[in-house]
Amino acid sequence: MIDNEDIVSDLKRALRVLAKGVVLIACRSVAGERFVMPATAVTPVSMDPASMLICVNRNVSSYPALAEGAAFSISILRHDQRAIAELCTGPANRDSRFSLGDWQHAENGTPFLADALAAILCEQSQRVAFGSHDVIFGIATGVLVNGVQDPLIYADGGYHALPLQAGS
Image 1 (cartoon, helix red, strand yellow):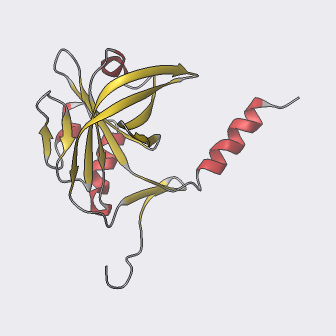
Image 2 (tube, rainbow, N blue to C red):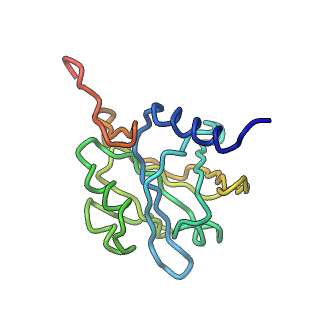
Image 3 (cartoon, rainbow, N blue to C red):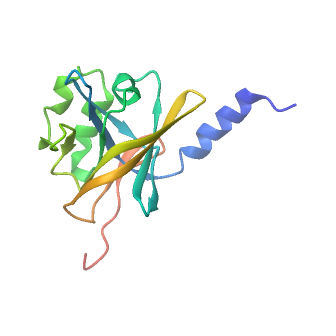
Protein backbone atom coordinates (compact mmCIF):
# COMPACT_ATOMS: atom_id res chain seq x y z
CA MET A 1 0.00 0.00 0.00
CA ILE A 2 1.25 3.48 -0.89
CA ASP A 3 1.69 5.86 2.05
CA ASN A 4 0.08 9.17 1.04
CA GLU A 5 2.32 11.12 3.47
CA ASP A 6 5.39 9.77 1.65
CA ILE A 7 3.89 10.69 -1.72
CA VAL A 8 3.08 14.23 -0.55
CA SER A 9 6.57 14.67 0.94
CA ASP A 10 8.24 13.33 -2.20
CA LEU A 11 6.00 15.44 -4.46
CA LYS A 12 6.87 18.61 -2.53
CA ARG A 13 10.59 17.81 -2.85
CA ALA A 14 10.21 17.12 -6.57
CA LEU A 15 8.31 20.36 -7.20
CA ARG A 16 10.99 22.43 -5.44
CA VAL A 17 13.22 21.85 -8.48
CA LEU A 18 10.52 22.96 -10.93
CA ALA A 19 11.55 26.57 -11.56
CA LYS A 20 8.60 28.82 -12.39
CA GLY A 21 8.12 32.47 -13.14
CA VAL A 22 6.65 34.42 -10.24
CA VAL A 23 3.19 35.79 -10.90
CA LEU A 24 0.65 37.69 -8.87
CA ILE A 25 -3.03 36.90 -9.17
CA ALA A 26 -5.23 39.87 -8.36
CA CYS A 27 -8.98 40.31 -8.29
CA ARG A 28 -11.72 42.49 -6.87
CA SER A 29 -14.81 41.28 -5.02
CA VAL A 30 -18.34 42.39 -5.82
CA ALA A 31 -18.09 44.60 -2.69
CA GLY A 32 -14.99 46.29 -4.19
CA GLU A 33 -12.30 44.71 -1.98
CA ARG A 34 -8.99 44.11 -3.78
CA PHE A 35 -6.98 40.93 -3.31
CA VAL A 36 -3.55 39.86 -4.56
CA MET A 37 -1.49 36.73 -3.97
CA PRO A 38 1.62 35.15 -5.49
CA ALA A 39 1.13 31.93 -7.40
CA THR A 40 3.05 29.29 -9.30
CA ALA A 41 0.07 27.14 -10.33
CA VAL A 42 -0.66 29.19 -13.45
CA THR A 43 -0.52 28.00 -17.04
CA PRO A 44 -1.79 28.82 -20.52
CA VAL A 45 -4.56 26.53 -21.70
CA SER A 46 -5.32 27.43 -25.30
CA MET A 47 -4.82 30.14 -27.89
CA ASP A 48 -8.27 29.50 -29.37
CA PRO A 49 -9.81 30.82 -27.24
CA ALA A 50 -6.90 32.63 -25.60
CA SER A 51 -7.13 31.28 -22.07
CA MET A 52 -5.29 30.65 -18.83
CA LEU A 53 -5.84 28.59 -15.73
CA ILE A 54 -5.01 29.28 -12.12
CA CYS A 55 -5.19 26.94 -9.15
CA VAL A 56 -6.34 28.58 -5.92
CA ASN A 57 -6.45 27.09 -2.43
CA ARG A 58 -9.90 27.51 -0.88
CA ASN A 59 -8.27 28.80 2.35
CA VAL A 60 -6.73 31.97 0.86
CA SER A 61 -8.34 35.35 1.45
CA SER A 62 -9.04 35.94 -2.25
CA TYR A 63 -10.94 32.67 -2.67
CA PRO A 64 -14.43 34.04 -1.80
CA ALA A 65 -14.08 36.76 -4.46
CA LEU A 66 -12.92 34.22 -7.04
CA ALA A 67 -15.68 31.81 -6.00
CA GLU A 68 -18.25 34.52 -6.75
CA GLY A 69 -16.84 34.73 -10.28
CA ALA A 70 -14.48 37.69 -10.04
CA ALA A 71 -12.38 38.52 -13.08
CA PHE A 72 -8.66 38.23 -12.35
CA SER A 73 -5.28 39.37 -13.57
CA ILE A 74 -2.03 37.47 -13.82
CA SER A 75 0.98 39.79 -13.51
CA ILE A 76 4.36 38.26 -14.41
CA LEU A 77 7.09 39.81 -12.26
CA ARG A 78 10.51 41.15 -13.24
CA HIS A 79 13.59 40.00 -11.30
CA ASP A 80 13.76 43.37 -9.54
CA GLN A 81 10.18 43.09 -8.23
CA ARG A 82 11.03 40.58 -5.52
CA ALA A 83 9.93 43.02 -2.78
CA ILE A 84 6.43 43.11 -4.30
CA ALA A 85 6.26 39.30 -4.29
CA GLU A 86 7.47 39.17 -0.69
CA LEU A 87 4.95 41.81 0.40
CA CYS A 88 2.14 39.78 -1.15
CA THR A 89 3.36 36.59 0.51
CA GLY A 90 3.76 37.95 4.01
CA PRO A 91 1.26 38.96 6.67
CA ALA A 92 0.61 42.43 5.21
CA ASN A 93 -3.02 43.43 5.26
CA ARG A 94 -4.93 43.37 2.01
CA ASP A 95 -4.63 47.06 1.08
CA SER A 96 -0.91 47.40 1.93
CA ARG A 97 -0.13 44.62 -0.56
CA PHE A 98 -0.88 47.20 -3.26
CA SER A 99 1.57 49.77 -1.84
CA LEU A 100 4.51 48.76 -4.08
CA GLY A 101 4.50 48.87 -7.88
CA ASP A 102 2.30 50.59 -10.42
CA TRP A 103 -1.10 49.05 -9.67
CA GLN A 104 -3.82 50.07 -12.08
CA HIS A 105 -7.37 48.87 -12.73
CA ALA A 106 -8.95 47.50 -15.87
CA GLU A 107 -12.31 48.89 -17.02
CA ASN A 108 -14.07 46.17 -14.99
CA GLY A 109 -12.13 47.14 -11.84
CA THR A 110 -9.68 44.24 -11.86
CA PRO A 111 -6.32 45.33 -10.43
CA PHE A 112 -3.15 44.54 -12.39
CA LEU A 113 0.51 45.44 -12.01
CA ALA A 114 1.17 47.78 -14.95
CA ASP A 115 4.96 47.74 -14.54
CA ALA A 116 5.27 43.93 -14.51
CA LEU A 117 6.91 42.13 -17.44
CA ALA A 118 3.39 41.30 -18.58
CA ALA A 119 -0.16 41.35 -17.26
CA ILE A 120 -2.96 39.13 -18.52
CA LEU A 121 -6.56 40.11 -17.77
CA CYS A 122 -9.07 37.28 -17.63
CA GLU A 123 -12.80 36.76 -17.22
CA GLN A 124 -13.71 33.51 -15.52
CA SER A 125 -15.22 30.88 -17.78
CA GLN A 126 -15.19 27.75 -15.63
CA ARG A 127 -14.26 26.64 -12.12
CA VAL A 128 -13.59 23.04 -11.10
CA ALA A 129 -13.11 21.88 -7.52
CA PHE A 130 -10.28 19.41 -7.00
CA GLY A 131 -8.87 18.44 -3.61
CA SER A 132 -8.07 21.53 -1.54
CA HIS A 133 -8.07 23.85 -4.58
CA ASP A 134 -10.26 25.19 -7.33
CA VAL A 135 -8.94 25.15 -10.88
CA ILE A 136 -10.19 28.35 -12.49
CA PHE A 137 -10.20 28.81 -16.25
CA GLY A 138 -10.16 32.34 -17.60
CA ILE A 139 -10.62 33.78 -21.07
CA ALA A 140 -8.01 36.46 -21.78
CA THR A 141 -9.64 39.85 -22.34
CA GLY A 142 -6.47 41.94 -22.44
CA VAL A 143 -2.70 41.58 -22.39
CA LEU A 144 -0.03 44.13 -21.52
CA VAL A 145 3.57 43.23 -22.42
CA ASN A 146 6.43 45.38 -21.12
CA GLY A 147 9.33 43.08 -21.88
CA VAL A 148 10.46 39.50 -22.24
CA GLN A 149 13.70 39.46 -20.27
CA ASP A 150 14.69 39.21 -16.61
CA PRO A 151 11.75 37.38 -15.04
CA LEU A 152 11.67 36.70 -11.30
CA ILE A 153 11.95 32.93 -10.84
CA TYR A 154 10.88 30.79 -7.87
CA ALA A 155 12.73 27.52 -7.28
CA ASP A 156 13.96 25.53 -4.30
CA GLY A 157 11.95 27.68 -1.90
CA GLY A 158 13.42 31.01 -2.96
CA TYR A 159 13.48 33.80 -5.53
CA HIS A 160 16.10 33.87 -8.29
CA ALA A 161 16.98 35.76 -11.47
CA LEU A 162 18.08 34.12 -14.70
CA PRO A 163 21.63 34.90 -15.76
CA LEU A 164 21.57 37.34 -18.67
CA GLN A 165 22.96 36.11 -21.97
CA ALA A 166 25.57 38.15 -23.83
CA GLY A 167 23.90 40.57 -26.23
CA SER A 168 20.52 40.53 -24.50
